Image 1 (cartoon, rainbow, N blue to C red):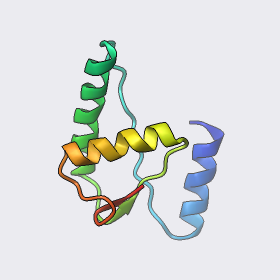
Image 2: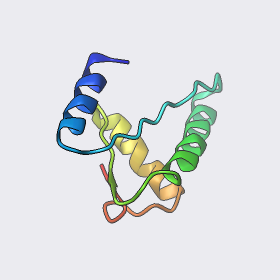
Image 3: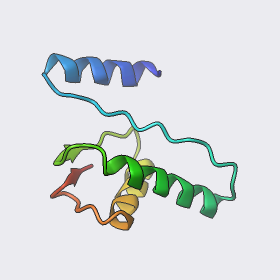
Image 4: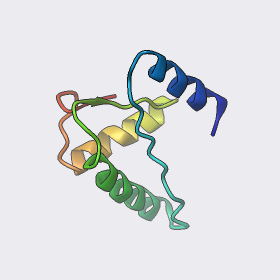
Length: 83
C-alpha cells in the first residue's frame, strides 16, 4: 500500500472514520474495455459501502472517471457520493 494511502487511512481512523478501499483489478483490455471493466468493478463495490460516502482520489483525472462511474451506477453525486 502506498504511503499516501496509509497516511490517509491512519488519519481517518484517528478521526473515527472508517475507510473502504476499492482495489481495481487489471483487465488487460483496450482502453474502452478497460474503463468498462473498471466501471463494472466500481458499480459492484459502491453497492456494498454505506452512503453517504466521500471518495478520495489522488488526481483530477481519476476523480472525473469516478464521477462518470457513479452516473453509470445510478449513484447520485454529491447526494450519495462526494468526490
